[in-house]
Image (cartoon, rainbow, N blue to C red; front, top):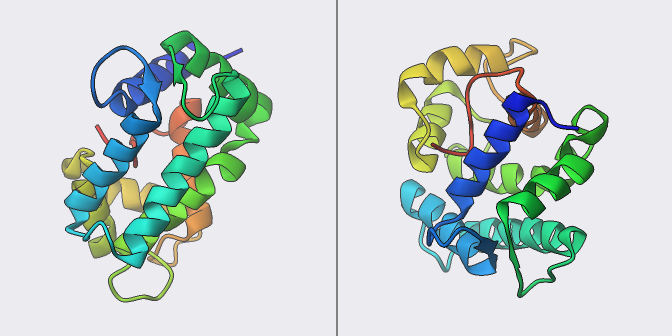
Length: 178
């Protein structure tokens, strides 16, 4: 059962993904969100990195839609979204985060990783934060908190853990926008 903070964050996420504002989320909302992130990075929609991001977002949509029983072409209400997220992502201290979100986090990392070293530097992280529409004023502090091994760069695992910690109420900074 999700806590109050977790419920609030799931509602925030739902609202972010409800791009057309119709009170439900569907595949087109997820496509629009991926395009918004691509525009934020200045990435052409036909690039390999863009394809990877779109596929990751649509894979996440397919997984959640099927778990909610609405199918790939259906739509999900806020209650359906919260229930499926609670059961398949938040349960067992967020055991489903890596499975569901790692492909998306990895695709965003590829967009942010301008030097191609497979990790995110502080400068690349600031670019990430701006591109997804998160609060840039706390980027440096968030970077320090997320860099759990203290090596001055963020790995996919640290980034997935940060998204998980945000949704579980352990971190006050969202890496996926707003």
